Length: 210
Image (tube, rainbow, N blue to C red):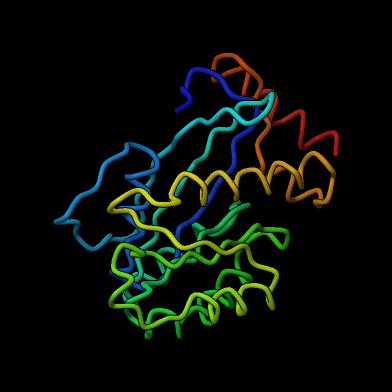
C-alpha cells in the first residue's frame, strides 16, 4: 500500500450503483483493508483516499462513495463532475441491481468527463451459490459498452485491489497517451512530490498551459 506523503497524479474516482450492493465496503477494503458487517446506508457522499505506486509514478486516488438511494440522487449528481474513473457496482445475487446499470450509466455520462474510465463490478462473489446474474451476461454487457469488467468480494478481498488498480492504470494510460481533452487533463490534477502549496501551483500551471 502506498503512502499519502507524495504523489504525481490525483485521480477522482466515483463508486455508483444501487443501495446495498457493497460500495462502502469496497471503498473501506481498498483504502483501509477493513470490512464492516454492519455497514449503514451511505447518506449523500463519503470520501476516502489512497496513494498507490504504479510503475514509476505515485497516484493518489480520491474515491467518492455515492448514495444509491433515490432521495439522495440530486445531491450526488454534482460529485460526478471532475471524476475521471468510476466503478459501477451491482450485487451478483440481486438481479434488480444489475437491471439498473443502464440507468446509472446514462446518469454518469450526463455529468462526468466524456473520457471517464468505467468498470462494471459484480460484487459479492463470495455468494456465488446465490448468483442471479451470470458472469458471461455481465461481461458481454460490459464489452458492448466499452466498459472494463470484474467480479469482486469486499468480504474476502477477492479482486478488490485489482479492480481499483486496473481503473487507475487505465486513467493514467489515457493521460500519458494524451487520449484526453483539455477538460480531462485539468480534472486529472497533476501534483508533483511536495507540499500542498506546490501541488496547487502545479494544478494551475497544468490547466493554463493546455
